Length: 230
Image (tube, rainbow, N blue to C red; front, top):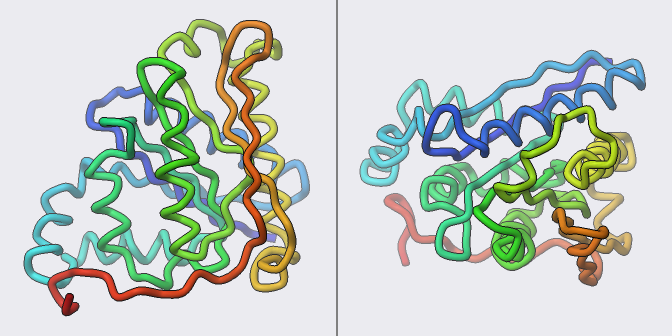
């Protein structure tokens, strides 16, 4: 069985901790799926490489051939990993612009693992208050465990099983694999879910649970754009 995993990283620099976290998550999900006998292809999208095309798309109303191919890869993927840096208590403008330009229906019923990076753990609420609602609006199947990595989370090696970030990645990759199976999709929308954003902190603190209610279709609203009327 062949699976395709798309990874959208919105870091502004190379190298960046955003891309590092994206790679760690992609490796974990791929390992989880391959352990179940699947063949996995990973397509990584560095949003910074398409910044000018995204602006032109917003202004002109149609994507360049290069950007169209990127959108096609994200739409066709069986699962999606998204990682954004935290800017002013929210996702970055570049990250948001990418999904503003993507077709409204591209992520319907698609498993999405969300993640973010920031200077300190106090920014981790960005995942529950900004990132998760956006993908819920787009009717994606958002993985319950979101992963946040602060600067001090990068002090240990990736093989350290006591590292809180390693444990978070392990949990999220298992959830992504389960949501990529036959039960994923429309049949799952009526099942109850609980969401959690987990971050590193001494003594295992920093784990927050939030009731996510039920996964039901979100009413569509007209979005502003070059080819849409307000």
